Length: 349
Image (tube, rainbow, N blue to C red):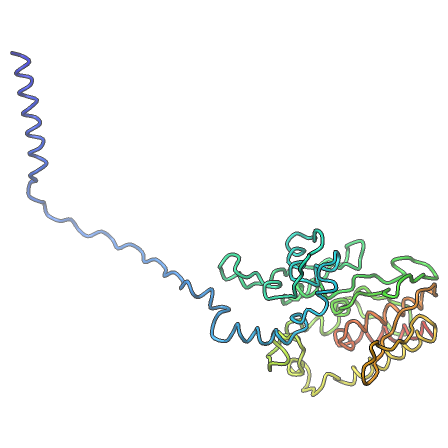
């Protein structure tokens, strides 16, 4: 009897429960509206990042300019692009590896010339930083075995310094003494000493009648950058990604020069450099040779003669080669170039 009563009560409870779920009572009066939420910021168009480079003719223009540059030509890729110790500047793969890891491991079997991706971080994070320069930190100069000479140029120029520098130090620092033995026809500064002259480091400061300007005090070092002079407004042949300096870029600072021989500095530099070269030939440190196969008109190159010489003469030879390999006719640092030439000429004489 008790079991039947309990069962009936349980059945009644279930019926009441389901009935309450199926049928709701009338709704009450609506409450007040809550406060509005804060508006969120609109996201950026996903195409904006890409358009920083891929807009209209921007990318094509840079490519057209770059096609005219020496970097694009890859002049020495076949010769030095895969060689240990050379590949970090003479191939795209070597440069990226060196800037990423600090070393290049082994030779590169199929080196290629410098490309956009060599100098820019392309398509790595798909952000605005994608087209930034690969490296812009200060550069430890290779000529200094103590690693104490660090160059820090403004305006992204540090990327250029990585390769446009001498790799050899002046003889009296390498082996101090009254004489110096040259053992190779390739002795001296490596090709491309632009940052050395601009910063004023790595030359043989032979005592003489002309005082050397302090490091980093040249007007072009203080008032310009590699980019302002070599990447100015392009006419298709100069400026932009051709990296060819233009007179128009000079006009931003100088009073309307019409040639690169501003104030006769180029003419004066060339005369003094040739005077020093001819003196070194007379002293036997250099020999003049005809280019083979011969060209028309005939052109010459000057080869270093290995032997033991007075230290001052070897220092003068070092300065001659380093100033010639800069190829700016002293423009990167006219005051220092003039002092080096005058004092070197006097030392050889």
